[in-house]
Length: 458
Ligand SMILES: Cc1ncc(COP(=O)(O)O)c(C=O)c1O
Image (tube, rainbow, N blue to C red; front, side, top):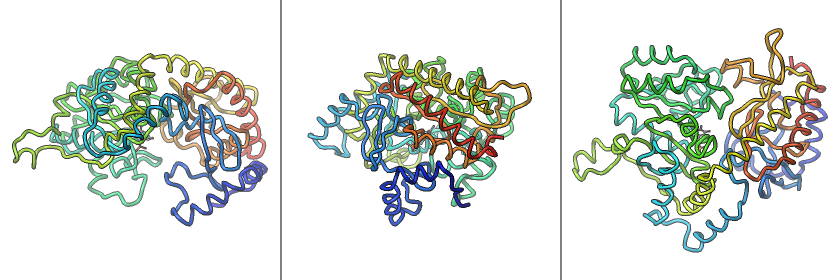
């Protein structure tokens, strides 16, 4: 489908000639011109030149207040001086050994202290890899091949991760997924404890349940209060493992993630992003007896055939370790969360006031330091700009692409950049002044898109 030209699109093209050139060059290298599907933007994405604190600049010199924050990896903002100093110091000593080093245990001990359910852990290279390993550990421990997951929850881009992630949830979100993998994943709607219990009771081959404990895509599809507690009880009483994917929420929703906030104890937890100090990396941690399935026993037969194997050239990379140790030191104080959760609440409230002034059928919502915007039809009498009126995963994750891209582009034209969907996250580098400026930009952007494309707001 071709992109409908509009004043906003013209303005975007006008503001970004060097980004356009960069994209044309990149397209001759990468099939889509981007290195991650989420970076795709039409008519082309902005190409970045540098970033510092809560700001970033593109190759055309345009400045943005950044709510992408490295796909939520940067709790302390871009180029935090203490993180930079630690990384620089390690850089001088070599940035990659692919052998044991002294920072590994120190890094891991921070995670154990902050997340008590993590008795033992293992390092990976990304959140996707962390989930791949967690599922392998769970299958090894339970001896059961199948996993239960929830519509819209994102666990990475590997074959298992593609089942049940996007609308329509019945189909894998990518071509090329083997039917054996599809058959080993059962995807159901969240928020229905009875359905979970029935599904587990009906299928003894399901050994594991995995979810984003914020609700899908960092709270885009919120969970009902009590659902996580019910899930813990249902899985424990049936001897199934529960995995919290805290790749985004870990160290962001609270120093101990969602589980720290709610006092819950999953069997395994996957982490990445903040867990690796905003550097490439990932972590799986949890119950010692479950993690033990990857330990060497010293018995050749068991180690060859019963142990869960794991490898990775860059696992526990020293630069990531150095960045993580500094970052987790800040996390442990709880100070970052007090600051950014309050700012995020201020942003959501301000955008909701703007929504009311504009009279569009929308609401800003979110948890902790995240915010999302839902735009869509509502039942008669439902107030706008207050609470979310839909629970349906397909609707919450299915806002028309043209509308999502239109709002993102209109915000970029006004110096604000989001993460994905119509939403983003904050960092300790954001200020109340940034939030005020963002609310003004949101109001202008929503007005511009609504005036150009009223059909998208019905
Ligand atoms: C909840 C969740 N799990 C897993 C992943 C995959 O992590 P990565 O991109 O590091 O592979 C992501 C990525 O955004 C995520 O949000």
